[in-house]
Length: 227
Image (cartoon, rainbow, N blue to C red; front, side, top):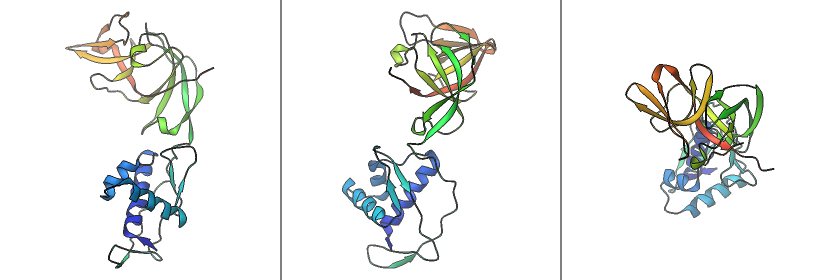
């Protein structure tokens, strides 16, 4: 038997995992269920764990796994007035990627954070925590140069790029110039021109006719290795 709030929380967590692969925060769960404090969420999660519907993944603050959902033929819930309410069977969904899973993404060589260099030199794979990626297809590029250091992007970092051919003003993008040279920069429009701005006062912006620039993706995250 699940209470109405336990049932509501379980399906809310499952919906968020289906959408993003990342479980919601306690604050988000509190707001979704209309509770006044997070302690109520802790009690609901503990109860769902005890009943085998939910599992907390170790060593992660926001990692929950839904082990099962109630079956419509067997399960009922009791709301706060102890009224028995039948459950509707949830629509089938693909099993989401857990937040602590590792995903292999293509590693396409080095990209300059300064002067454009030839893009996509290599075709290796990079192991990336799923929590660093959002929806859509991704690839990785190793950063070369220091022109984006004021944005926290350092030489040797791995830029995780969501594939896209459009960008909004101020996005950090992989811009392909003249079909062969790529650079990682802030994307700006100036009339018919595209301005690619560095995040380092020692470097000048790069301006090109719009036809010369193709957006190859938007920055989704960074991976840094310490040796």
